[in-house]
Amino acid sequence: MAVGHYPSPEMQAIAANDTGVTVTGSVEDVRPYYARASVVVVPLRAGGGLKLKTLEAFAMQVPVVATPVGSEGIAAHDGTHLLVAATATAFAEKVVCLLEHSEEAHAMARRARLLAQKEYDWRTIAGKFGNYLKQIGGRPGVVNPIR
Image (cartoon, rainbow, N blue to C red):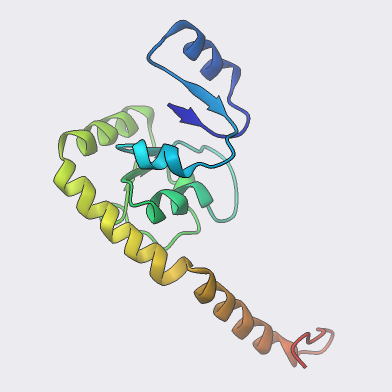
């Protein structure tokens, strides 16, 4: 099952020709899909910023295989919180590995959830952002919104 914005024409064609493949496109709530997933794949090849798909999977305690781009900006470690693969072959092998070794996959997913709770909870992020604003607030040319 592929869930997400703007599925490629190739993905849609595969789903149209294979009853075992479903492409949903955008959905109102991704949580039911994460809850049913055995592994979440984040095969991003381009992009910037924090990868919310990866953090959502961490928060839902689902094992993740991602490309290096799919894990950028997250303080996760390959083999500890997720598996990272740069090629299509390695990616497929790591997905199969997680499916075949469910105990290790679940342990990795638990560690990923703990990381998400510790580092990416909104209260943690807001606190870090507030500290950053305090640091830059006294610099010339910077408006201090905290005063």
